[in-house]
Image 1 (cartoon, helix red, strand yellow):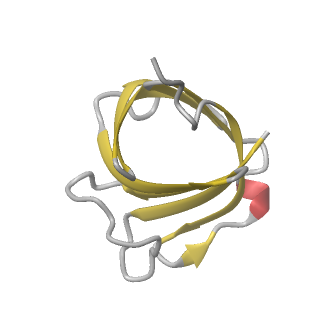
Image 2: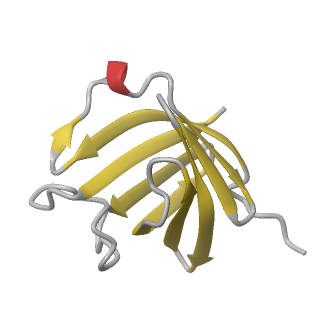
Amino acid sequence: MQTNKLNGTWIPVQQEMGGNPIPRSSFEKQKLIIQDSTYEFTAESVDKGAVQYKDNKMDIYGREGVNTGRHFNAIFKHEGNQLTICYNLKGDAYPEAFETQGHPLYFLCVFRRN
């Protein structure tokens, strides 16, 4: 079985939502841990769930925590030690680009491998 190239701990270095940058102080203690088809996102609370990959798209299913029962669509790109994910928090379609301007429920996060 091939190991998921995204496995590991990721630390956010940039975030924006709806075209507006989010201050670093809001996310400096967050981290994303990916292990094959599961994720754990730690902030002030813990969010855990399942993730499915197809091409450069993700389907994210919250199973425990603030997003229990929710489904999000996302696109991602992995370049070296950087992972960029653009989430559609409405969960009704995949974002078409890594752009949140004009999309109030699009959340973009750039991570670096820890």
